[in-house]
Image (spheres, rainbow, N blue to C red):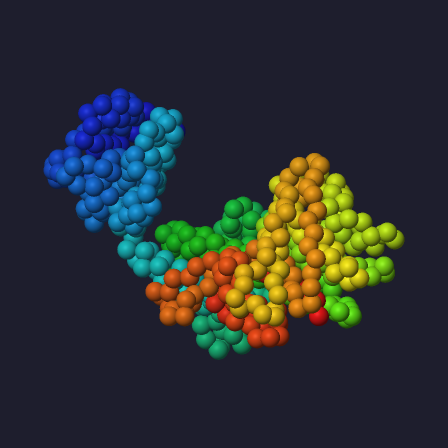
Length: 559
């Protein structure tokens, strides 16, 4: 809270609407010295007269000049001023301009909430106070500023934890003209053995090897280092002018002691002043932040490697869940491909040859991508195979209803759903019976001849699984003939982006369009007499440097 004796900060409000000016004035007049301006031009004149403002609140849409343009004109003259934009417009261009051109602290849309605006302005005022205090401190100590920048630049050159420790030691030792500098990492309030060290000369280095307590204090029982470990406060030892001075400083970030910095001056050097120690402590804070970031980066890298390894295992497990080898059947040919967009995905297919002779086909797509979708995919395959392995082959719509009954509760609780097509082909009668739960329509066409015809879309369909507690839809059926093909796909195929012959996906001017089923049919027409799903999928993927969705395709061809 601001003390009563603290002078009021200047707050400028700029708006071409008198009602808004009055409202803002009444809101902030008790806590701020409010300066009002009804246009950007008059605001600039007032700034010339009254000087720097702590906070400027400006309307964006004003007749003479945009608020962001006005604010940008104040940046060079008053860099410490905190700027806030009020506008009734929320387009992205205004937002980007407000942040980049106007150096804006906050971007608030009209109508604003008074309490929210007051909180933002109070935060801006506090930020201004901190900035002014810091600016004054830096102006009083130009040496400290240049030294501070040199050190922080050096320690930010690497994110590797161990190289970061050595960089900090060398930079501090050289910049502060220390005879020796030691950095002791701390883990769980205990000193670690892998310390980083810098010595100004080989002589000092040899002395440190023969008498480490004299220069580096490497032992855990070293008095100053141990004292810092306990108190977390800077400790200094300077027995007399003829002996070296030893300084130990804690490197703490968010109350977590990360390391202890140990500095030594050579005998006869000017002892560290209070300002020097304050500077070292300030640099230690920045070094602690850098070490924290390096440790976080190291942990992130280790976690990322672990996640990649786990996802590789998950991908292999998911791949093993799908049919590795498709059955070789008399009178039909089956092909299938499935490529997840990430390491694992929610697409799946199933080809099951029932002992009674029927061939079951299924393609499913769990909403979403990644691990959550992959878990539901595994559950769906497990339940589907259990239903299909019954002694008496069930109807496809009955299988779909059972899947929904078993999976719907989990799907609803996680806001997921599954689209799926299940088809049963009976070779003896060449009849295909299918059930569709919100999935893309299967395509059927004859390969002899085919160029002059359109495919047949099997359009009997119900809602996706997991939408309703009871799934109900009729089963569709079609009689197939020799040379006809049934094709099932996921939306990762039909929603893939493709490019025209006159453009490429690498061209900045290229305009791609969604493939859709009509585009897929055109690609199928370009296939030769032999349908190759792997080649077809590779052709689709060649248009996209990054696969955006899981892609699955399955076909059954009657020979």
